[in-house]
Image (cartoon, rainbow, N blue to C red; front, side, top):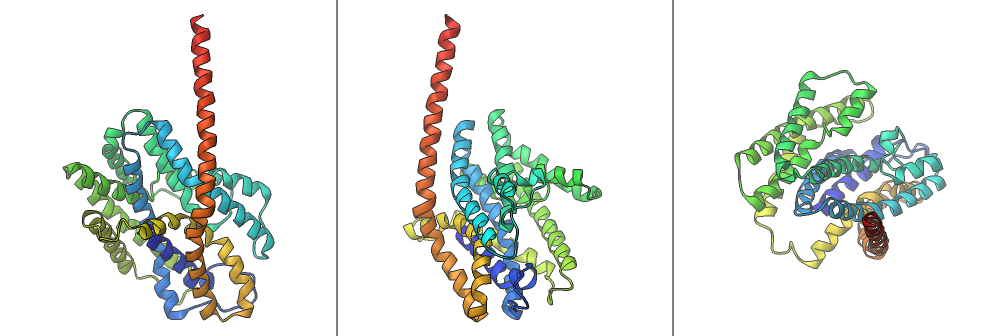
Length: 360
């Protein structure tokens, strides 16, 4: 399912976004796909679906973990592929003509905290990663304070905060937007949905879990209508067919129903090595297809028909992603894991020496 969500995002960017919204500086090239493009525009829901799956994965991976184990696992999952793709995006942007990127911007992007410093994402697709990181921090704080058993209550409080924000609807100042970011006001409902699907599957149904799921579904529907309505307003002059807000909500709810069915009644092919390989490739596919893909499209478009180039580029990215995972991400992750293990050994040894010197 993760790979399918990543493919939806690529479909959205390649068949809709770059032809209608993206500021290509490549002359009067026509990269619009009238009918297919409108269908592809709903692929942006792949991001919300990703957040739901992330909530499920984090609820699973935080079980019986110390804070150090949780941080280590999340860092090894998130950073190796990101650092490599971030470097590739920096090099691609430096070569391409449509964007100027400073080295300072690249360095701050490596931290994943660029948004907190008002620095632009090196690649447009990186905007989602800060929300993933904040949710990790949210769960990490619960582990640190030994309150992970109250995870569901914490989610419910967060959802109440999100709803209150929509009701009050404060003016969009820099401070307010920063608060929305840090508290996950806009996207917590998606993470909560995934987390509750896992908890219900692993621990059973309780009234609290049902309330969190219902509350999250309502907020998700409202957020989708708000977000897609805003896009309709912003893109009114450049997009021929606006989003159908009701259809957008229905598509998301269908995905959620599919996720629930997948978890409770997994298909026979779910645990095959091919499905696992595709799941592993979803993150590299998401990271690679942006600036790197756009640059290749920019360079090749003058020599290829768009109906050949764009589908071919999408297939190429889907083929490259598993190879990237196997031959780049995994070796780099193993190398980073060794460095972390060595660091932990030195840290433990230093603590023991301090204890001994204190006794003396």
